[in-house]
Length: 354
Ligand code: SF4
Image 1: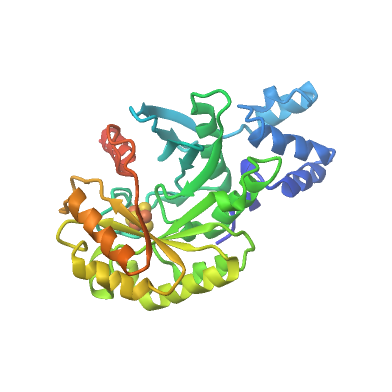
Image 2 (image 1 turned 135 degrees about the vertical axis):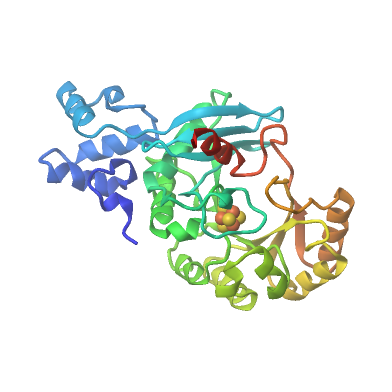
């Protein structure tokens, strides 16, 4: 699929080099492109009028011919633990979710990559609304800008990005890779590649492609079950890409990038959380340098599942660790502000629908 930045109107998705070319093609000096790139992401201007290094005439002609489609925060929910969950409005009136999380080391942001999702995972709130379109690289970048703007600490800045919000990032491959490269750029957000985590439901060909990009980001693979029989009930993608070829692709990713793959496993009571499931999981992963991230599941009213008890989650972790596989339990955050990803957006769409 063509990257949206090839559309000359989509100026926020352009790399620095592409912005220079964009200016030159219009008879303007190339350095105006670098100035725009830096102003958009490093200085986070809201519109062209704030680019003081530009002549007034250029600012006005850009503002009238190509307004910046900055995201707007439709609602901002601040949790007691410092989590900030934003429902952001896109220029076409659709909504996505972006979440800012405070940590000991600073702040991370969880960004969306699509409007809705077609993967149909049985436990997910985001997938209840089907994908209507991909986000452009500029729209993903602008979530990081918005997140930085919302951090209460004046000296704070986003230092990690998780592509784990609404959507399957590798189903929007070109825009996601462009996003990462621009956010990594010294005049962009200047984030090290190791500070990005891309989550995927397991699109095997895209994992091989990503391994060739020479961007050593962390890959987080949603596994959620140790057998194809069970995984197919939870994740339809397993029919197209079963577990064995998926694990092979992850091993290849590790060999090419040196980045240990993280396997995400949401624990659902009585579904995938038994001792046997834990042992099956270790049979699959032991002897291979990877990590298991156990996720206490956040209930979604439309889905029939229940979260596993804390005791069960800890017992599951113990078995995995005893078999030599690195395993942690994800810390629950933002419990008081519609924690499950996709819930805010769905509520908003329901309110808006006739
Ligand atoms: S878990 Fe991820 S891939 Fe699966 S439906 Fe939800 S957003 Fe899509």
